[in-house]
Image 1 (tube, rainbow, N blue to C red):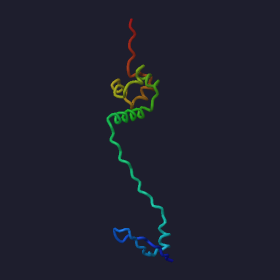
Image 2: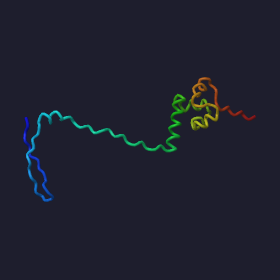
Image 3: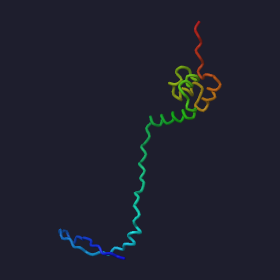
Image 4: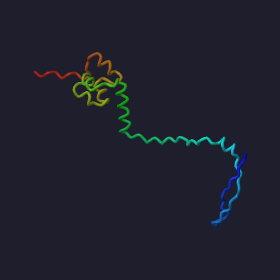
Length: 117
């Protein structure tokens, strides 16, 4: 079954419009009634800054250490342990991979200062 539809076609630059009959195949049109899905466009990743890279590395070290609390940092590194960076903690003798071992053993990475007599 085909039905006729009139389509307006512009003949020239003038404003005259001529109507031309066009036949439409209804069955073919019904078969193509699938909704068009727009392709997924991923946004370009923003370039990572030095600060962002450093923060990312610190978070990875934190996860590797087992997500310790402030009290656990203080137990291993002393009263300023939670304020130290991972580089400072490594220099003190305990990296993120061995943090849980230090915590379980009860040792401190930074020796306690000796009391003055």
